Length: 115
Length: 112
Image (cartoon, rainbow over all chains, first blue to last red):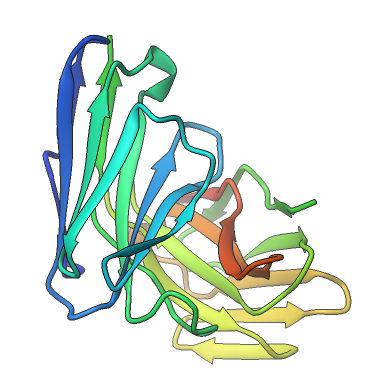
């Protein structure tokens, strides 16, 4: 248990569906992140929130829409996804977004399959 | 550009020693991390190096040479539970602020 909880663990959706991924951290951290992990590719940073404000948006398609209502919760809203969006989506948190030594605490991820 | 290279897969024997190498090319450098990720689980932090040299933590050690853009993770007295992917990540000082860039990971198989 890393203190970062993601739900659901697995999700299968059609290309016309709308779904949301949820992340909750119990560590009192100020920064939260969404990463995408595809097979045989590096972890890709998607979004960074610091104190509920989005500070990074890594050229992610608009079919992915993040929401950070407070420093403990992070959502990723999905709509009209493509099959190539199938991947493991990891949420992470850290005490602060910019401090050099800051390590990331990851959730177990949501394994997403788009049919 | 940004590039982090590490071997895709390695195999070692229980009780032995294995070294996982990582080379990086980034526009800036503000530290290097190693993470361990078991299949189906969250990556977990192993080590952080920002100065040249060796950092030892129990059975795991991590080495950094900034001039060579090189790091390695050394695992001693290997156990079956060490079978996992090992992710090398560099905190790159970009144009606006820094971000952590990950390699593809090295999948380590431990044989009995």
